[in-house]
Image (cartoon, rainbow, N blue to C red):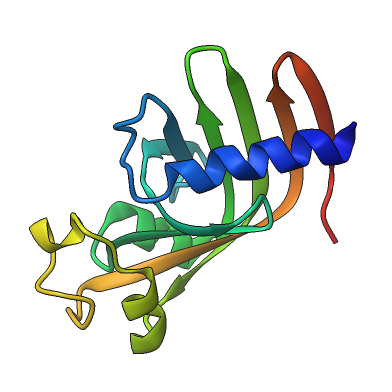
Length: 145
């Protein structure tokens, strides 16, 4: 049953890529601020590999990026009207590699950046260490190696 729930969670995450919550589901990223408190914000997934890793796009000057530079611990939560709640806990890093930025670019980002080569544009790569997944009222939790 755990693998079935993990597979369903992976499909949910895949559907959220580059939709910005327009399909009724939301992704929230929580990072630690300079005073040690968690801060959360809604963010769009650029790409993912199931529950294993996710990427997000943001500005190098954003509060998120500044917080991640100081503490790389993070959590991600997906939810949609009680249908599911997927919580992932892990680490996050800032990527500025031109190839990665180009690969993670999606329609809609042009409203904020001049293109994938924009020096202020960066990618956040989240890697899951542990998870708590509730899908169709079935729940599982575990640790990824």
